[in-house]
Image 1: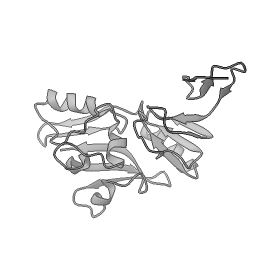
Image 2: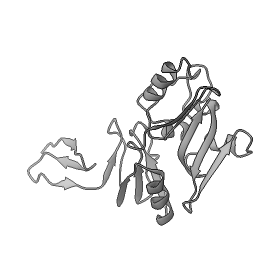
Image 3: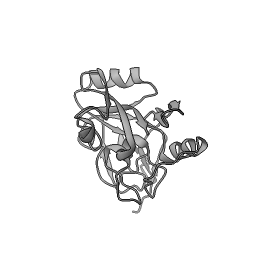
Length: 192
């Protein structure tokens, strides 16, 4: 018997066969080639929520628009969805800086930069990715540099739920530019 799969709003898979039974708590990538189970899915909209989830969890993975073609979100029971943590936090015209939350898409960041008369010199091919995901995984653009080269500040939530700000003056900045989430979770990102 053949069956087809449909992604439901609650991130589960529903099979369209005789049993028609849902498979709850199954994370699925955008192209449906990567799937894995999880126990808890936390949708966050604020830094306070992000801090709370991280502080109370043994291990977390963060995801946004599910554009990773690898199983980068697997291996833990708690997933944090940052899709709704996607605001522009600050625009500093004097320093030509835009600070955003990690769930904002590259598309929306580019639009805001253009509204300011600025550009980001390094543009990946897909603009639907979240900034947090693009940065954590080393997404590069057409000029050969990674997108994180144009970040001047990171605000990170550490494993104990505390927050730390990093700037170009900090020795950790290069490691944070391609951290895969091992050094903390992005809470705010400033591009210059």
